[in-house]
Length: 97
Image 1 (tube, helix red, strand yellow):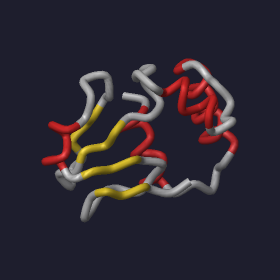
Image 2 (cartoon, helix red, strand yellow; image 1 turned 90 degrees about the vertical axis):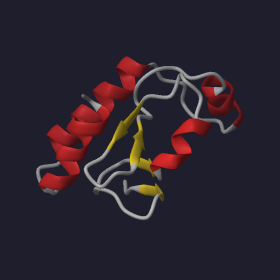
Image 3 (cartoon, one colour; image 1 turned 30 degrees about the vertical axis):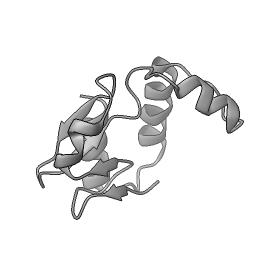
Image 4 (tube, helix red, strand yellow; image 1 turned 180 degrees about the horizontal axis):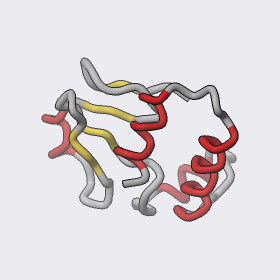
């Protein structure tokens, strides 16, 4: 997993980043954190924003609860000792915080 960027800069990790001026265009249900680079990280693990279930169904994706998503990425980190520290730090700072 790599970073998906709608921003000019940002930390490494399984993040979805956007430039901070775009934050006003996001629904209030989307959890965001300002990164050390000034971009915003949209937390795709937390919450159940409107339309998520429909998107998952239409894309034939597994429908998972927030708890299941958090557990899955936590297990991924635990089982992959070769992940770089910056990648893991981003997960803990921007997704699991």
